Image 1 (cartoon, rainbow, N blue to C red):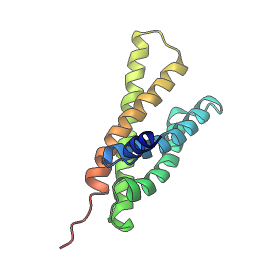
Image 2 (cartoon, rainbow, N blue to C red):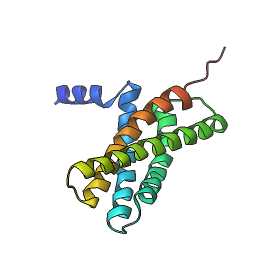
Image 3 (cartoon, rainbow, N blue to C red):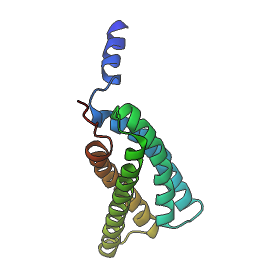
Image 4 (spheres, rainbow, N blue to C red):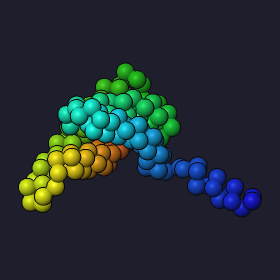
Length: 148
């Protein structure tokens, strides 16, 4: 029993910022994607509206957890929030634009339903968004300020 506890403790105490980012990302992605798919498939709202609202909800969780847990950042809110919003919006529009275009192209070559096209675009967009967002958050938003 002690061996299992020690082993689990070792892996549940991540030290790598990418691992912590992925853990935080899992929380906000499940939350955000649930909202996206609910709005898209239950309320039949548009792709862009659904993904924007879902990402906004996930971004709120993301900022707080990434600032305190993932990057343990000392960047001020006055400096961090505008940068965070800039990265979030840049990653959002570029990732979801690309994924939408990719699945539009894909559906012209392969006979897939509109629903599969939109849901596939949401999933691909969320993967691209996560990768680009990690790089932006780590190197631009939450890069700790060096003090002398």
